[in-house]
Length: 279
Image (cartoon, rainbow, N blue to C red; front, top):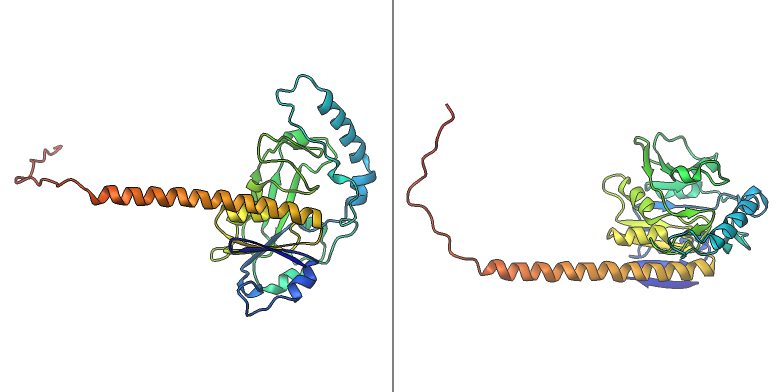
C-alpha cells in the first residue's frame, strides 16, 4: 500500500476497507481525527456507460467537437476515460460509513436503497446544456444528518465526457465532480465538523482539492493506481497554491504591522465642536 503525504493530509492507494481497518485509532492519522465523510462511490452503472445509448452519443459529440471550425477555443480533450471501466460494475454497500458516527455526504445516494431516510439532500443542477442528453441533468447527494434540502447550480463545461481546459483542468475521471460543487458540500456540513474530511472512494481527488483550498485536512483512499497518481498530483498542486497564498497574506500582514508601528502623532482638539440639532 502506497501512502502519500500532502501537508497534514494523507492519501492511501489501496482498498478502503483494508486501509480503514488498519487505522490506529490512537494515531493522529487514524479514524479518531475524522469529523466528516464526503464521497462519491461507484453506482454500478459502467455497463450502461459502455454499451448504452450514451456511448454512441459521446462518439458523435467527439467527432463534432474535433471538426467544428467555429469553436473559439480548440482546447477540447478526448474522453476515452470511459474505456476499460470495471470498478463500477456493481455498487458497494456503503452503510458501514454511517458507523463512524460523523456526518456523511454521499453522492449518488439515490442509487442506494438501504440508506436511512433523510430530510437533507444536496442537489447539483448542471444547467440547460444537459437537457435531453443521456447524462443526468442533476445529481443528488445524500446527507446522514438533518437539515433542509439545498440546491447548487453549477454549469461546468463538461459535456459527454469532454472538458474545456480553459477552466479548472481536464476531466480525467468518468464521475469527476467540479471542485466548486465539492466546496459547496463542505460548506453544508454541520457546525463543528469539516476540519478533517475522509473520502474513501477518492477517484481523481476533487474532494481533497476542495478541502485543501478551504484550509481543511483531508484523508483520501483510492484503489486504482491511475486515479491515485492523478489525485496525488492534483492535491500537491492545490497545496502549493494554498501555501503560496498563505505566505503572500502573511507577508502582507507583517508589512502592514510595521507600517502601523510608525503611526503619526494624533493631535487632540482642545475644544469640542458645536453640534447642530435638526430641530
